[in-house]
Image (cartoon, rainbow, N blue to C red; front, side, top):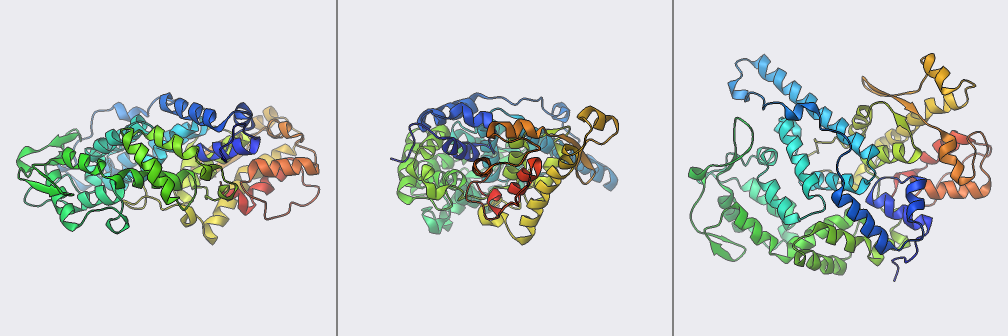
Length: 478
């Protein structure tokens, strides 16, 4: 049995970097000595009940914008689109701030997981309020019922527009929507155990006809005259099915629980799922009524999750890297927007995944170009802080002279602060001192999920030593 009954600091860090972002010393210290079962239960319980720290962006309470068809000129339509995209940027900055400051990182990680699973892009949807409502749907069900989440997303206006399903009618059923619901949302690819065929897709498409969007307020609307009322055959079941009926048929398939658990495995455990464990947990998942927290707790207490061979087996996403770096070192900042823009530069543009399959992740995150950009990010994060750390002026004097360090992406900028002594003190290191061998080992264990691949020059002190560790390729792993 590999699941620990008394966790070491390294085991706690492994749990916290997988269920959240890079943990602080205080977050690790809080769980040292506890059993994995107890810690997992506490983390999931807190994530189930937590609420956002900050109020929603003001625009979400505005009246719905005038439908594009009612705007008289091209300029009016373009201006409205620009305003909508700008409001989407507000959502990104708001969400990054939540990730940076939440006391319960798992909650944000699960919202991000579902955003990727049910991928929808504002680039096509445009409506910022619709993207916000979809985001709230993910928050509501992030660790609740997958069945409820599935039914909700299938009627979500942003999703219906994104997959061109809002105009699906009995004389022209939208097979694309039906295919994605089966292949990407519930059962997986037909050739990989999904258990359905092209005729099933056609029948499911008929069941979804009439599911549409109100043009005025962009809410879900069932258009009865457009619905196919005749008998359908789906996965061996026969009946006058509607969209909810066929979703329940999919949920009744063993492949559904296994498919979702397999994706959760790749997110939290390792790149290659254990087939037998996925079947076992998938069955329990379905029997629980598709309780997401049950499936996640089972995954986090498998021997595979705690196996040494799976430490550092996953690659940090841009969000992992950016949010984790700012949180773990304790950087202060004045604006979260530059960090949202930085994740986009690194390949993870929130609210705008590349396609309906979402971000593929894992090795797709890293190539020669993105690895250099990732290193440039931590270089940028530490560079100006490092200059100030070597200045004889105190922070107040630097601020008065306009010398506080700035993290800038495009026109967006954030004033940064970092007390390196606060970060280093628990590890027996001073900001202006050279770490001894024991401290070097500890810092490497704290910041790297696998063995360092580069040697830091003797005599490297304070913030420079931390920066050097973030430049090691092992810093990109979790």
